Image 1 (cartoon, rainbow, N blue to C red):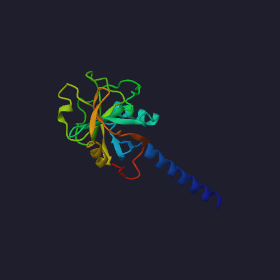
Image 2: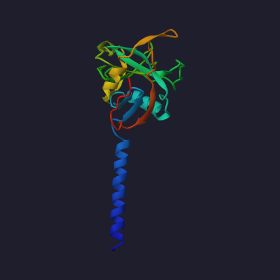
Image 3: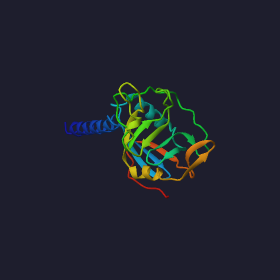
Image 4: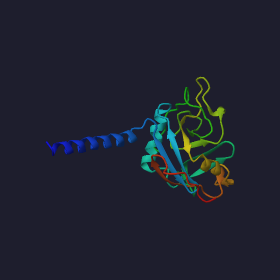
Length: 200
């Protein structure tokens, strides 16, 4: 009996630790850390508001798809966009489109993440943007689709603001491309350990 009690305590503790680990993985609002050469920032996702877009984004994160890509479109007082091109503007093929979830969804407010798309509302794939300001004109209106918001920057918005201030140019026919690449170096699930600004 004296041996069984400590064993039972160990088993109970092990179960508690496992439960804690599972609770982190099954968080209702997953977090992702994105490390750039301008610093790192944490995004918190909203699967309750945009389940398909959240699942889509996490599939790219788990694959490491965004690592090595740049913020290829930067427009001050509007938004910064990434998820499609590397520093040489080579296009990285996405997995496939995801349906639009903007009708009845979250608003394009400052700091939110939204799916970039073409004219077809259901044409979003890997590319996303971060709103630098409130952009109500990107929201759905009645039954007319807008741009699906699926999360927000919850730590490190100063990094995004700095990216939004970089000097841009026209390169290979693309407008608003930063003169010096703003590169996503690493992406991981979970919040960033701390906010850290990179060199200008």
